[in-house]
Length: 130
Image (cartoon, rainbow, N blue to C red; front, side):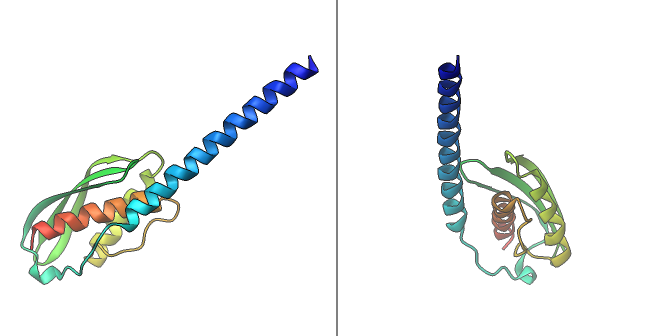
């Protein structure tokens, strides 16, 4: 019985090790995709009034937003879609964007990848208003 228990423990540890390694590979790929996002300065004085939609995604995170601009300011941001796994709390980033009137804000700690994808989607929406 002890040999069977030891065998099961070894198999479980190997499976957990492989799953952990796989997760680390995927996380590395996610970070690489986020680093590929390109941004340029958006002068809100040049963004027309209106409602603009933007999208961005990586392998694990997909975001669609609607950004309302009024009188050269971000009036509101609505998240239309956020497929995120564990990054739901990243949605709080939209309040900073509205308050600072910019897509260029800090990521939410612990939800960096989702934060960056949301930020990219807002950036894409604002570009449509230029």
